[in-house]
Image (cartoon, rainbow, N blue to C red; front, side):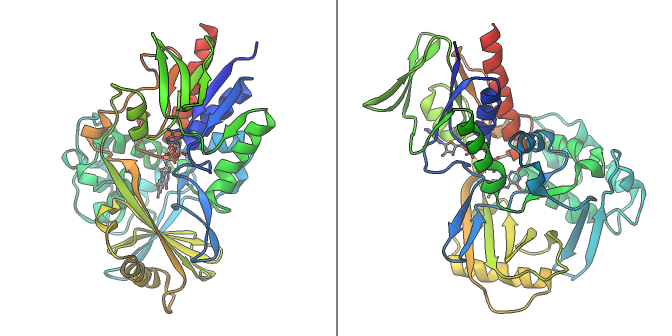
Length: 418
Ligand SMILES: Cc1cc2nc3c(=O)[nH]c(=O)nc-3n(C[C@H](O)[C@H](O)[C@H](O)COP(=O)(O)OP(=O)(O)OC[C@H]3O[C@@H](n4cnc5c(N)ncnc54)[C@H](O)[C@@H]3O)c2cc1C
C-alpha cells in the first residue's frame, strides 16, 4: 500500500521534503496556511512598481549544493544564473573607491595568495587571523574569535557575515559563521559563484516544485492552516485544521512540520525553538539598470548593503534591519535611493518604489538562539521537523532550509524501513 506523508508548510523546507518523498513514491499532501507557496522566499505582483518582485533579494552561492540540487530536482537549475567566475564588485560610499574581489574558479582558496585578487590594502596575515572562526565552537561569539575591525573586516568580513547571519557580526555565533566561511571562502571560487533566480524566486524555486508535486499526484491545499496536532500516546493521530476539518493519520503515515519557529512552538507543546528574530529590509525601484552595472554590487559605508540589477529594476538588501522597521516608508525609500544613485552612478528623481520589511526574516544567529534549535526528530514517532530554524548547522538560509527538508524526508523514509 502507498504510504502517506503530510507536509505542513509550503516554504522551501516543506517543498524540498515533499519533492523528496513524492519522488520516493509517497502519497504527499501539502497543507499551506496562506494562498501561496514559497513562505519567506516568494514573488508577487506589486502594483506600486507594476512589476513582479520578490519579497527579498535572495543570493545563493554555487557551493550551496543542496539548494542547487533541489533546483536541479525540480528542473530549474538553469534558472539560477550568475557569472562564470566568482567576482564581487564593491564600492565604498564614503570614499567612492571601487574594487573587485576575484575568488577565481578553483576548488582551493588560491585567491588569498594573489594581492590583485584580494581586498585592496590587505595582506595574507589579515586572512590568517580569520582562521579561529573555522574551528570555533557554537557557544563562541564572532567578536571573541576574530578581530572585528580593520580594512579586511570593513570591506569583506562584515558585509559577508552580516548577510549570512543577519546580526551585527561581533554578536553572531562564531560556529555558524565558521560553517559559512568553510563552505564558501575556504572552498575556493568554485563554491562562491553568486547565483540569482533572475526570473523570480517563485518561478525558479517554488512554482516548478508545486507543478512537479501535482504531476506526481500530490495534493496542495492552500488556506489550510494547521490549528492543532491530535496526539495519541507517542504519535500524531490527527491533524486538526478546523472543527469539521480533521484528517486522521494512519499508523504508517508520517507528518513533516515545516512551519516557522513560532507556529511550531504553539503546535507542539514543550518544543524548544529560537525565540528572537531579526528583520531584513528590501527596496525595489522601477528603473532600467545601466548596461555596465554588475548583477550584484557589495556596498559599504552607506545604508545599502547589496545592490542587485534586474531587468527594469534596481533592488537593495539591508540586513539586521530592525532599526528601519518603523521609519516612515517614503523617507526610507528616499534615503536608499540616494545610496543607489551613488553606488550605481545613475541620477534622477525617486522612481516608482516598493519597500518590503520582513520583520521576522530569520532567527537571531547568536550563540544563545542557536542553542535553542531542535533536531528533525521529535518525541512523537511519526512527526518530524523541518525549517531554517531547526538545527541545520547553518544560519537561516535556503541552503539550510533544503537540508532540513531533505533530512526530515530521510527520517520519514527510514521510518518506513524500520
Ligand atoms: C527578506 C529575506 C531575504 C533573504 N535572503 C536570503 C538570501 O539571500 N539567501 C538565502 O539563502 N536565504 C535568504 N533568506 C532566508 C530564506 O528565505 C529562508 O531561510 C527560507 O525561505 C525559509 O524557508 P522555510 O520553508 O524554512 O520557512 P518559511 O518560508 O517561513 O515557510 C513556512 C511556511 O509555513 C506556512 N505555515 C505557517 N504556519 C502554518 C500552519 N499552522 N499550517 C500550515 N502552514 C503554515 C507559512 O505560511 C510558510 O509558507 C531571506 C529571507 C528573507 C525574509
